[in-house]
Length: 449
Image (cartoon, rainbow, N blue to C red; front, side, top):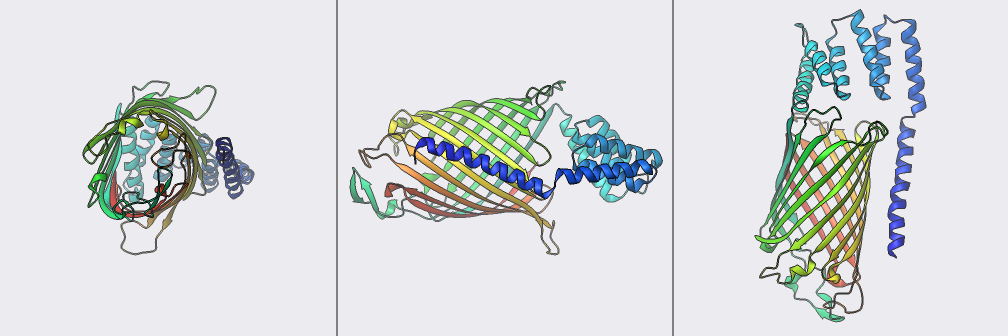
């Protein structure tokens, strides 16, 4: 398949899937039907404004269609008829919270706790929102997560499936110790976001994101990995007076990787991110990133510097809320890697799809009855620009790859969760040297703050 055809396939698949899913989402909750119900509820409320049930129904429909201002107006009228409604004050606090009016939200939430007969669930929700308001109105905010556990892989070293390989353009046999090798590892990852909010009227903030990952192999010590990445840049609204719901973020970044306790590569660069909320059920994101990689020779890898070069990636992602408990995500990317030695230069095309579902588990004595599972599939095509003389002096390398994964998260508290994953990778290359399969399974725990 030519490079031009792959680009057309990538963009065409994303566009087609976007239209299909958007149509599916519209079919599940037709806006015309909701609007008709909303209009009927409005007329019913006008005929009997003192009927709180009618008013509350109107407010619920207003929230469903995203008209928070109408819902606020209706709920505030309810308080005129009956000021002793803590749940209504709670809902008003939540709505103002969604609109970003944190001062008014705090007022309603605080007043929702007045009185002696406030339900316990109202007190709990108010406490959660007040804590979140405190975070969001502070100039300095921290958020992040940590995840760690154990993983087993059937082919930890990504070795070829067979000892039969190509060498200098002819068939050869590889020693079995260099083929696929199973192994266990312990891994840990962490991400921390620091946000500085100067409280500008335009809403811009400064974000710094730190990502850390480490893995310690049981037997394949040459694969012990330590990776760190830092991104820093502002985030704000993009042309708010012209385009609604679009945020931008330019950033600079640095990366450092150690392999087998030895410097492997470091990278520096930057990127630009655009995010758009298209409505209550659809959101999208585009990201362009360019980095320059510098590899480090070592005793076991004396020619790594030949891979020095620049990497550029354009990625597009779309998220669709299919009902209140599930999300479908579609994405695509094009990445070019230009190395000092052209046999390492390549272009990669990627398509990915995932479906995430939150569901109730009818098992007694559990900390929570809602679990989350996610299934994802990714297809990757990679074409190298020049032949590798050590493999074949004439023919370029070309790889096709499938990645499948299933993840289930089981919350055990508000911040802690157990996570299990099962992954499968299958690489089919035009050279047997690079054909490999790998199945991995992991179990771990995550903490969010």
